[in-house]
Image (cartoon, rainbow, N blue to C red):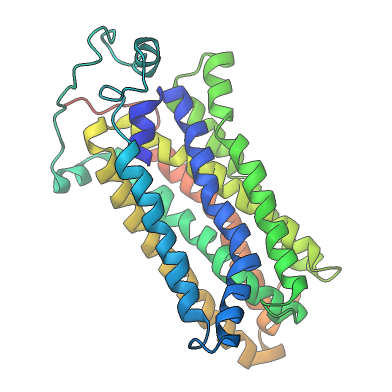
Length: 334
């Protein structure tokens, strides 16, 4: 999807386009708690296994429908019958040469896989994904358990479903606008796309700091953590849309999918570490009880507070490392 965005949009529009399709993750998270438990319960009542098996089969099968649309409808803009010459000119506005012969498919030089790691731009993207993907997956994976542990709301309860739905509704609506901010910086401030993107990412890096207040305000109501995590999650998705777009700023289109995959691996490692570490911390802190304390919280509540603190500062840390690696716009020319 990131490569397609680079193929169909000029650099100034890519973060906005990415934020739109990236909102699909949030839409799925909105639909999941409202449908999958009910689906599983239906098949369980019907005596078909434990119910959850068919829920997996049906949800997984939907991917093949999506794949069908992708296989039969998608083509590169130079070859697509749905793209006219004016649109091609707009798409190729960043090219050094005008796209007068845009209908001719150009063969770009490719960077060998292991050679990708020679570039600071690759390590910048790896850094952004490693430090921040785990935050998103922590919220996605642990939010139901958090509301169950702290407030006694089981995942199948109407209260838990409404809390999770509200959380991801905030993420879905607000994150889309995150990709529009660099477009404003480019068009209104005259910044280059990478500079506008990095400034936008710095702004969004402050949103997760709200997570510091999730646990303290949670003593008043479960709705406070739901809203705060929703805002922090919206900041993540806006950050992510711009982070993905930095690949198109720096690398040739032929290498975008490769760099995206490398960064995705780094994000997966970061996600594994924070989720595995969080689970171990919660088990340990719960067993220690009042003997384990942090910032005025004891036991498992202290464990959650520690993880919220890590999630809060991860983005600013990642941004400063990325800025140190690639301080200004430096595209890779082969």
